[in-house]
View (cartoon, rainbow, N blue to C red):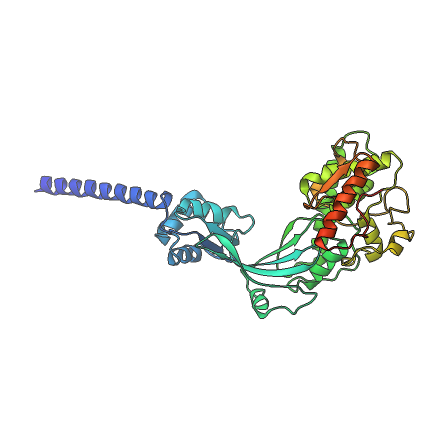
Length: 393
C-alpha cells in the first residue's frame, strides 16, 4: 500500500512540476511576446502612480493581457519601483517587457494631450492638440493668438489637467521681446520677468515645461543653451573671419537668420556679408534697418520708407559701417554655424529670385540684371516696384 501511495505521490509531483513549468513558459511568452493591442496606445503614468494601478489601467485599456504577469515581470526585472511620470506612445503589439522598459526609462512624453506655446516670427499661437491612438498622429483641437483673442474654454479646461504635456516651441529668428510676451501669455506659467534678455541670447528650441514653472527660469535655460551653442561653434571656427569676439559672430548670425528662410542658403548669405566686411563695404541689409525701427517689438508689416533708409541710426547698415551694435533676433544653431563657417565665394550681392530663395552676384552688372528680373516678377505679381532690394549695395 505504501508503495502505491509513494508512486501516486511521485506521479502527482511530476504532473505538478510539468504544469508549473508549462505555466512559467506560458507566463514568459505572455510577458515577452506580442501584446494584444492592434492599434497604437497612449500609456499614461500619473505622478506617484503605483505599479498595481498602472498594471490594472493597462489591462483595462487592452494594452496587456494580464495585470499579474505584468507586475511579476516588473518585479523580476527589478523595475517595480521605477515608474516615471509621463505619457508614452506604445506601438501595436508592444509586449509587456517593452512597456515596462518604456515607462521606467522616462524621458519626454510622446503622446497624450498637450498645450504648446508656438513663438513665431509673425505671431504667437497657443495650441491644444491630442494624440489619436489609432493613427499615432497628433490632431489639433484648438488654437488662439493671445495678442488678439481670448483663451478658448477648451484650452483653459485642458490646462487644469494633471496629465497635460506642456511645451514652449521657439522659432528661429524671433526677438527676445517676442519670447517674453509669449511666456507672459502662457497662463499655466508663473513669475515675473523683470528684465528683457539681451537680443540674440536665447536659443530657438523646444522646451518641455511644467505647470507653475517660473518664466525667468525658462529664460535662463534658453540663455544657457544659446551660450553653449555659441561657445562650441566659436571654438571650432576657422581662422581668418572678420569677428573680434563671439558677440560679433552672434550679430552676424542674426542677420543671416533674418535674410533667408532657405536653410541651404545660409552659408552663401554669410559669405556675402563676410566679403563685404573684408572689403570695407557697408552691409546694406534691410532687416537691420527694420530692427532699428521696431526695436524688436513686433514686425514691420510694410515696406521700408525712403526716409527710414536715409535716417542714420546704429542699425541702419545703409548709413553706418560694420556690424550693428547688437543682434537683431535670436538666431538658431544653423545660422550661428553659417556665420562662423561661411561658404568661400566671391559674392557681394544678392536679391530675391522669385522662388523663395536668392540670386547671388559677384559684380554690380550681374546684380543689376538680377534686380531687373526681380522687378519684373514684382510687376507681374502686381507688387510695388520701388521697395528696397535686399543685399543691394
